[in-house]
Each structure stands twice: as structure tokens, then as C-alpha cells.
Length: 532
Image 1 (cartoon, rainbow, N blue to C red):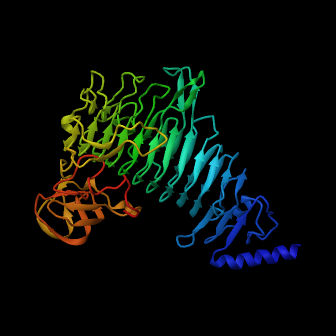
Image 2: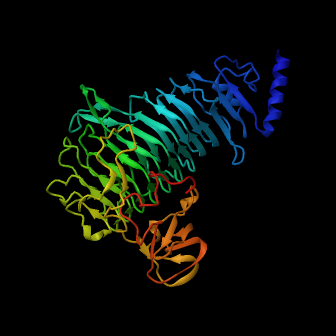
Image 3: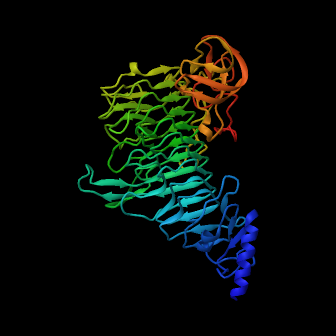
């Protein structure tokens, strides 16, 4: 028996030079070779110990009280992969971390579910970890401030794509709280939420549904992350421990700080942020950092404002770019009192007053006006120590009547992401009614275009493709290959000529950009084409 095992191991090591397919099944045994569906290992632990660069671990359907936690890294060209076998359902449960990536790189997990694990996923000092097509549900941890997913300790260039991620956190009785209750935990953290300086940058969160977080659905405390094409919602779901018939929600996206700049948050549906147990507002987005881009999002039915730009002790909410979003029916939760409603809230809490935020080409419609001490038009809730005159406002549809969305009348269900449909009808007054985001600094020809402000755009930071841009009076669409934010230069993929003061925008149809999240005749279904 020992001789057979040794030969089998040797054959496995030889075949692994080109990448080996390993198999795990409840009907298997760790004494098997693992290299055939007819000779599977019996545990994921065995696969964790054996998987090497280029290998793929196929896990047969079933429920495993184990974690995926590989002991080796892959390489850029020979990634280690763990995946469900065929279309079988694989569920990890009953462990602390369903998926644990510590000090490793170039690993992919595809189609594996984590249900009722203490936490779902830890990416710790790791990079190029890809998590795809997984379900994460019912985090079981009920102490401290549990996070369903944590990307921490300088973890970078990781991807979470095509997943359903939900239900992490709980409500606790806390006597010193103003309401006697407090939410604990959150669904996903990128960067450390307490200790500043965590360089967990350059991560991609794309094409996911993210729902039901305690203090937040997502907290972003690092820089150069791309968060796009997701559906966020956080309507009341956490039971009150003193009254199980009462439930609470909270904000969808939060975070900030001086180490959390230049993030791109685009093409997301961000909705149904519900009343938290401490009655401390429920924003679609509430962030305290600079130089972020918030564009082409639809923010609707959030309890307070759609976006909160709030300077706090850990960060100033200045110099952000909020453009081409749709704000609809925010601030409608009547149970939340004395908080900032309307489309956008701009506040200063023990920090530097927000200034220089560029707010352009947004549609504001049917948002609830803030309480009396704030600007009361349903668009902005501005604190007494903040001035709208210190922001950059242009091309916004400010509660000026019906913008003629395709469908904002059909009853909605938070579990469905298709409604309301905020695409514009052909007769919409918001078509060709926006402004160009910036203008060229001088006349020129070549591939480096100087502009008044390059901060509206991104080159993708090595994570995704750079923006496509279009000059005023031109049908040519250029790919941005590099952005020099200090020099305000855009390097593009084609030779082009331009005149001084010529408008620059994302791609548009007609004479000028439209208002709102969708460009009429160009955007389809609210999704960016793959690879864009």
C-alpha cells in the first residue's frame, strides 16, 4: 500500500508540471490519487495541501464543513483554481472562514457557495485572488463587528465578480446608545475600517448583487478600486432583539479617510437603504474622502439622501466628481427624523468643510425635500457650515418636472433589479441637455490632450480598460490610456486634433451629453459592455 501511494504521488507531481486536475468528493478518500473522478480525495483539506501552480481542483456536489485555504500560490500564467464540478452545487458551512486567502496570490474560486459560515471570505496580504459566481449567505457570527468579506493588509488586484453576497451582521442591545440598539458588522470591507493606512488598493467588485449589511453593505477604506455594474440594496432585514417583528437596515456604501481616494463607483443600482437601529440616517452612499468618481449610478428609494458627501474626523469629502447619475425618490423613509434628505447631502462633521465637488449632468426627481434647516428643494441638503457656492454645479435636472423615464410607475420589489427603468424616452427634456465635463486647455494635435480638469476620467488603473472619451463636435471616440492628474493630461489611443476650449465628455449621442445615468441611444440596459 505504501508503494502504491508513493508511485501515485510521484505521478501526480510529474503531471502537475503542466497543471493537474484534482477531484474531491464525499464518496472519495484521501488515500486515493485524487487525479480522477473515479479516484477522488475525500476532503478539501487534502486539495488545499496539494494544489500547486496551474492545478484545478474540481469539487463534487455536497455540503462540506471545510474551508478553501490553499497552502501555495499560483503564478500569473498558472493560476490555482477551485471550482464546483460541472453544474453541481458545492456548499461550505460550519467553519470560521468559508474561503481563506492568507499570504497567497493567483488563486481563483469559481461557483462555490458559503452558507452559515462565521464569515465568508478573508483576503489577507494577498493579491490577484479571483472570486467568481459564488453565493455568500447567512453569516453566522454574532459577536464583535463581523464582516462577511474582508480585503485587508495591503491585499491588491483582487476581483469579486458575478456573486450574490448577503446577510452579515446583527443588531445588539447597547444601553449607552441613544436608542438602546446598535448595528454590528457589515457585508464587505475593502481596507481596514479602524486602523488607517491599509493599502488594499486596485480591487475590482463587478456584476454582483450585494444585499443586507448591518452597518453597511460595502465599506471602502482604500484607493484605486473599481466598483461597477453591481446591485446594492439594504432594506430592513435585521430583527430587533427586543421586538422580532421590527426590522432594520442601513446605508449601502460607506467609508472614506485620507487613504481612500481615486475610487471609481459607476453603473451601479444603489437602493432601499433602510432605517438603522440608531436612527442615524440611511444613505445610498455616505463617504468621507476626496477625488472619487461617482457616475452613471441610479440611486433610488434610499431612506435619507442618495449620496452623502460628509467630512468627518478621518477624511474630507472634497474634490469629488459626481456626474451623470439618476437620483429618484430618496429621503422617503418617514421613520427617519431630522436627517439629511433630498438627492445629495453635503455636511461637515468635525472636519474640513466639503468644497470643490463637481456635480454635473445628474437627474434629481421626486426626492423628498430636507428638513427646514437644510436647502429645501429636494436636491441638496447642505449643512450650515457648508456652501453650495464652493461646489461646481452644472447641467443638473433639479426637480424641474417629469424627465420621462421609460418606467417609474410599475410597482417595484427590492429583490428585483430591473425597475424602475431610468432610461429616457425619446421626448425626454434631459436628452442633449447636459454639459461637457471639462474643456481642452489649448489648441493641439497628437495623443496627449491637455484639459482643465482630468479628474473626471480614469485610465482604469491597470484593473479595467480606460475610459472612452469624445470631443465636442466630433464623433470620434478615443480610449484613455493614461491620466496625469497633476498635469491634467489625457493620453489617448489615436492621433487627434483639437481646438482650445473644446468640450470633453464620455461618449454621447447628439449635440451634447444627456442628463442622468443613461445616454439615449447609446447605453443599453444599464450595463457597460464587457471589457469596457
